[in-house]
Length: 161
Image (cartoon, rainbow, N blue to C red; front, side):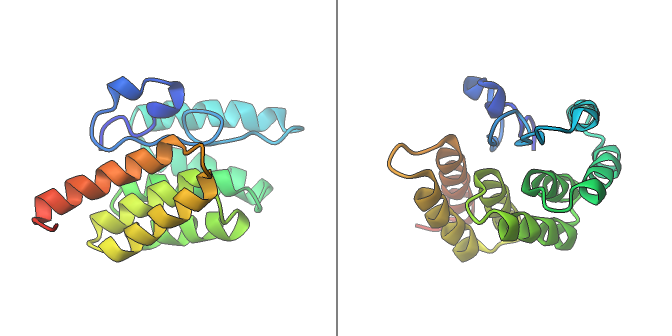
């Protein structure tokens, strides 16, 4: 569960366990064009995530979600933070919201896929991988590699072909 956000910064070689890469920055948050205050709040979210202060990140993200309820990136990060706390029902609820707002959200598809693996739901993780392949198109994306790698590790650990 280490350094899940590092790939988005371009440090793919530093990826520790399963890695996560998201859209435009290291946490998948694409700030709204007119929300200067959100950029400050996201800096605080980044600091909380870097410190593994999942509850602190959730508090800030809930504030962002209240002011921008249609922001798939915020919902994705809420899902990630709840997942890091092991609160899978809340994580899945936020991933579902993110994906209802943006069905091709690469970060949410990848994170949710890992959550499925962590809860022994391999078929659902495989479905997310398939959706990611469609969302990323022929050029691919880092999220495909990360979820594929996580699936390979899951299968090896479970001794599944």
